[in-house]
Structure formats: C-alpha cells, structure tokens
Length: 101
Length: 417
Image (cartoon, rainbow over all chains, first blue to last red; front, side, top):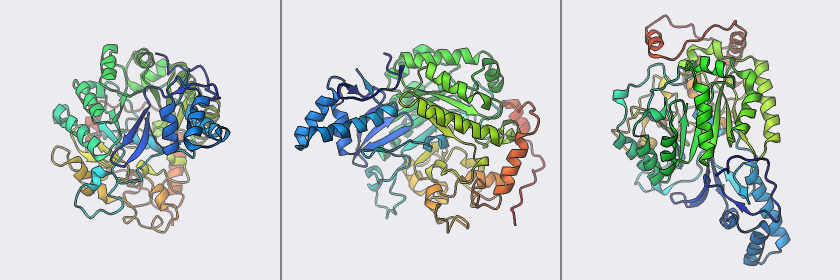
C-alpha cells in the first residue's frame, strides 16, 4: 500500500473517485450521540450532510455520482449539491484526509 | 508534548468542525447521580498514557520530571488494559502511547489491543531506535492507528549528539519507511531549540520525502529536565520568528501533502497558549506509576496531590479528583485573568509555567503581556539565547542523581511595578 506516499495535492473534480484512507475512522460517538472522524492528532465532527457524503466515498463512485445520489435524495439541483460536495471534499483533501482513484 | 495537540487546526469547513476540547456531555459521564455542573459533564477526548519512563535516548530537552518513576513502580499489564477500557467507556476518543519509550514495555501489544477493542484511536509516540519491523507489523495488526517518530535533527551527527544515541538516525529513517510501507500514517516530531532551529526548512523537506502525513515543529517547552537546560536550548527571537515564516510558507505550498503543526516557544509570545485547551477540560495524563494528571507537567506544582488509577476509577478522578478541580474553569483565577475578556479563550495560559517562573500556580502565565512578570521573562529568554553555547546536561541516571541533590535556590523573578 502506498496511500501515504502522495505525489501532490489532490484536486477534487466531478470525475474524482474519493475514498477515506484506512487510518481515518468515521464512527459514531455513542456517548455524545454524534458522528466523528478520527484522524492522526485530530478529531473532526462532520455534520449530517458531511456524514452522508463521506459514507458515499467508496472509491468507486465519482463526485458526480455522489452529487446525483444526494440531489435525488434531497430533491435539490445537482449543481448546488455538487458545489457543496466538492468544497467539502477539497477541504478534507487539503487536510490530507482524502484519497482518490 | 500534549500542548502540541491543540494548535493550528486549520481553516474550518461549514460541515466539518475540529474538536480540540470537548463541547458535549457524554453519556459515559452523565450516567452517574452527581449533580453535574456544565464543566464536569464533559469527558476528556484525549488520554496521554505514559507507559514507562525508560528511554534509550538522553535528550537534554526532555520535559519529563527530573525524578523519573522506576520500572518496579510501573502499572501492570492488567492495570493498563483497565485504563484503556475505562477510557473508552467514559468517552475518551484518542490515546497517545508515550513515555519514555513506550516500546520498552514488553506488553505494548496487549495495551494496543485493549485500546483498539475499546474504540480508542491509538497513536504510538516513539523514538524508534529499538523498534523492530515484525513488532510494528504485529502492532498494526492489533489495531494501532498512527505512529509518531521523533528526529532530534536532520543532520545525523548533530541529531545523535543531541539525543546521546549513536546510530539513531539510520534506525529512525528505516522505521519511518516501515510505517509508510505498511500504510500507516506517519508524523515526524521535530523538537526544535537553538541547536537545530536552523534546520526547520530541511525538516519539512525530510517529512515530505519520507511520505509523512504530518510534521510537528515542536519548539521545546521548558518543563522538567528541559528547564535545567533552558539557556542551552532557547533560540533567539529572530530565529523563532524566521521559523514561523518558513512554516507558514510551507503550509501553503504543501496543502494536502503535509500537515504542519507548530508549537511556538511562548517565552516570546504576547498571549499565552490555551494550555491543554484549559485545565482538566479535554485531556488526561496517566504516568508510568499510574498517577492521573491534568497535564504532563502538573507534578511541578507542589500544592497538588494526585490520585492513582490503581486506587480510583478514571472517571471518578476526572470528575472529582482534587488536582483536576484545582484549576478547572475560571473560579480559581486572580487578576488580571479574572476580568479578562480572553479568560475562556486562553484559560489563563499554563499553570506549570506560572509556577516555574513566578512561584505561584494561580498567577497569570507570564507568557501573557498582562502578567507583571512578562517583561522580565522575555528579557531573560533574549539574554539566555545570546549566551555562548555550552554543552547541555544529558538526561541520564547519573546526571539526575546530581540534579536531585539539594542546592541553593535560584533567585525568583520579581514582578514589574
């Protein structure tokens, strides 16, 4: 595995197929009834939308696929959703928390 | 070490917040019958488990206490396993396995397995000079999540002089490559002081080359043994500011490639660091012998007494332990903290530093410009940083015996009028 050897910055686009590297743990924090994303020396608290996006990041679905799924689910325009998804995932990528195929 | 956890979490995204200290009550805590006030209803999120004080290195900047806990006083395997289980139950999320050198414990495997079973995100903080590949593989298999390796300098010769361990660099580089080979995330820890501060830029290059995900530019903190060597460690103001520029430029250039966390030496600061994110607010520390501390250096405050995890449940200590409640919240504060608009931002800074510099742990941290001791502390740092460099005192048993002999006290600083 070579996930940690990154050649450069990942730019998230419609065709990107994102996934969370294995050392990132998205889990439910039972005691506090919220979702958390555990990373090296970091704890992030994704909101409901972020959790849904992250759960769709399986390395097979593209950002476009993810946006369409969410657009259907929320009956919202895909352009709006896509913009939000890209912004969220780019932020994660810039923190080093997102990989892609 | 743990003060490093809270700095610079970067820009926030609307959907994704960083948590540094806790903001939500946890059911692990609210399950009791106690009339809980707002503060106590929060469990810590981080546990620093100092598994042993044994260490193969002899770094003069070590922030562990001058008197180390002996191996025959260390907690047993069962006791550490119980600490991990209790930590998971009460809502702690991350455990930092540290020391000393945590791999000196033969039962590290069992402790890592217990942490993993308890849902804790585990971080091994190691000097890596005695680590074997097979052992690292085993630890990964048992659920280890992250490895942090310290490098005393980028230049091998200087690094080995600083750490007092010949051949250390080659071993560390080898171990760092194992970590990334195995797909584990790697943090490079760079303890920065006047003897290696010129190499901050090269540390950044090294971290990228090694495929590290994160780099800690950790300016040495002057607690414990490091306090003895302060003059041999203190960088100049100008050097310090230069590193800030180097790091900020690299952060922008290496977005998504390397996360750089920086702890600045606060002798040159104007505002104090929110040490530990506030006393007993988000972190717990357990020493090799089982003492539960609100911070790594808390034993330097002689007024405090500490409970032992062998005698009392972790949660009970967190909620009701005397040391944990001593400086929790803001009630303990005097002026200028008491009426300060920032009192719930920096929490009065660091209690241990207030103790070390002013002799009173309830004083404002002298790193704060509002402290009457501030000017003198900054002047002292500037003066020490310009002294000719002498060899520093290595951390080893012989020097420790010498350091523990009673001697004349140094004159304390006097506050400005």
